[in-house]
Length: 247
Image (cartoon, rainbow, N blue to C red; front, side):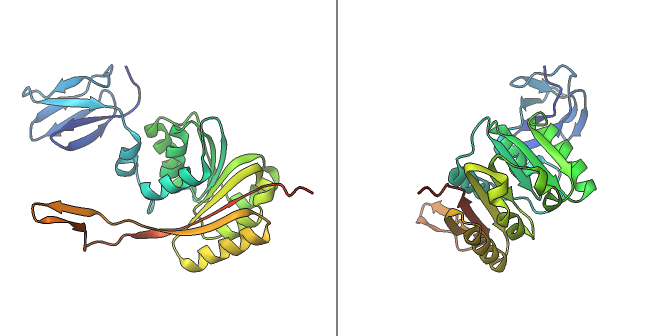
């Protein structure tokens, strides 16, 4: 039995429902039992079956309530790959927004403290953490990280998605544990440059800035080639690491 929202799925269609909730569809009325179990099948009053699934990581992007443009899964993958964030590590995040990044990191087992300036957005993010099943690992704080930075420290990873990310990167040595990583996502190249310069000025090592571009491969009977439609660019990611200078 689960007390969290679940997906009910039929022929590629997905509906996010709370246990005990009722859904009206063209296939009949579905009354989801209050003691519903994931992995089971439930039927509408017309006998049409729906599969019950738990909400998995890739589905967070589609089903969490949005308060802005969330970070894309491919960008999140780069953050995880570059920083190596793992279960039990402490993550400091700023610019929570929808909370997709915080939710992904929480599902990896990290303990996440995330700051959101907008109180209404923070409330939505807290509910999204419940939907994602990580409200015990992700703490959403309302406020400006820069105003709290003097009271914080010892984090394994700092992730940023804010307009003033460079100002936080400057304080990375105060926020990170030795060997810790910072990752800043920025939509504009000028902000990315500011983050690179701030990371260098702060004495971080392995400073790197990448643009994320992805093209879908079209495969049909005629042959295979990269898709010519769509925009593959999403943003810029700047990385740096706090490593001690010995000698």
